[in-house]
Image 1 (tube, rainbow, N blue to C red):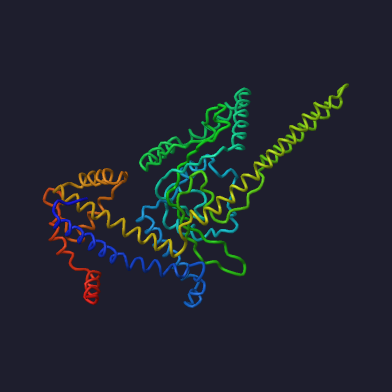
Image 2: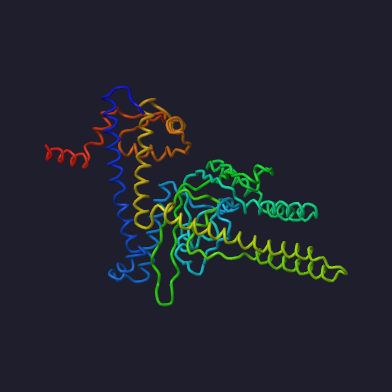
Length: 456
């Protein structure tokens, strides 16, 4: 965003600083309230501070709801959205690197805190687990992994063979009929979800082994799979109280670049994965089939030892394959959990809140300056024109698509007193020099001048 004259450039940079300092001052008190409230519910030191305050349980309940109100407002200002039921379904509709069914131990999570909040502040299309924990998400990215995926390819071949059997036996048609009935019960839901996804730009192609073309090269060589990611995820929850202790700590954990299909790795209080019921069915089914085949071979007039050996080898091999697949998936799960803790977890608690507060300030500053720049360069414009021009500028300069909040930006510029509206509803701004005069010298600038004076 270069202006033509060096004097204009200097004035614009001065305006940028003054706008940032002023907006930071506007939000200072709100953020101080948020941090003071969180100090009472910090899982590490909050219990001690609550004891010092000598508050009644009813007063603590009010304070924790006030904290959630402040937290959700900051989340909204930082462009974090609560993941909806449809987004969760889409995210978990496939597998990426995590091939084990992960479940949350709900008995270890509090069910009153968030339930009370959403009862007083209802939201649409909330997932089932929202009374126990909330998952906020922002931004979409891409994750790619290249490997040979040997066991996964074996599973893929077995799955395709099983799908072929379902088609041949026509069982597949019965399953499709049931799915159609479910969709017909709420046809508008799919349309709303698709439109929301289109507006939110959640369209990133998933490249999976299941859709891979069958060829010698693909089966024996390395492959690259791709999965959309949630660029940022914040999880909020509280642990369940025990008979001896009332739990008041509120956990706020911040993660980055989490693959949608592996979103379970950020969920709280996960159960240790084990063999699934389907694995046990495979074990028992294979054992029964192998036993029947061996007995039938032995009862034949001329029992062929090679046939018996082949049957037993096949059954034992299938056992071994199922077991080693589970062991590999378990090792991958442990690696993912370790990675999520050390590489993908950005911060937690107070650090996350400070990060959110800074996000809000930067977001507000950028909105205000982009809108002022458009008015300064292009003159008078209606609200609709400003919205379109700001989005076009962001697309051209930064290659990003967004839904610019023009109403909020205009409101802040009017609050500064550097933007006005004419008789026909068009907005216009004052000159750069006049804008700096109206905002005036900020406290930060006075401090910097004082420091420079001391140094000289």
